[in-house]
Length: 185
Image 1 (tube, rainbow, N blue to C red):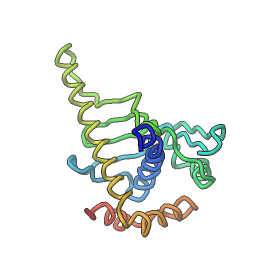
Image 2: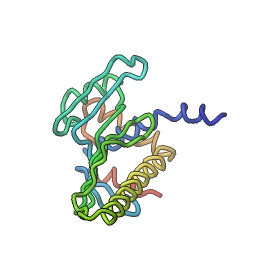
Image 3: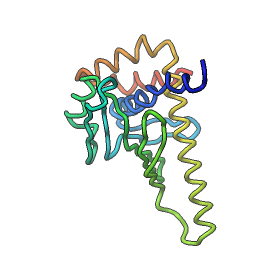
Image 4: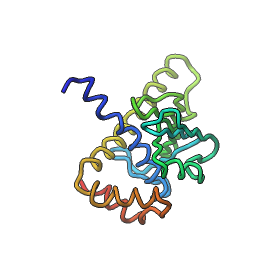
């Protein structure tokens, strides 16, 4: 399989990752362990765009505080629409990071870094680069954790049924159950 075909065949993973973050943020009250970084709060923030995979014109764009918490987002997800963009927020005390994630490419834009930047020129630039590297590291750790779960036997046996029940309007499993999935290595 050529590289372009491999890329095209895995584009769905970005949408699934956003759904997984959404699911975990509800099940764990936004508290996730970010491997290598420690406990963090992770949630979908002020933007969520969902589209039908087969019908690109069928689109729901939600903005405002916690758009994933509303009925419209849940209904769109239940109808088979998948996230194509979402604003994610990561809080690793005392640092707050935010960015818009484009699902098909995993590209991040509109990055918000912690407000502790120095005022001076070169020092400010170096600090900004360090914060961007930290954000990239946290994102990569979360995505690796998702991929680890995605290829594990528990994905089909336990996680997919729980996701389907949640999408169908049920409550997510208990935080203890979700943390158990995350701890299996």
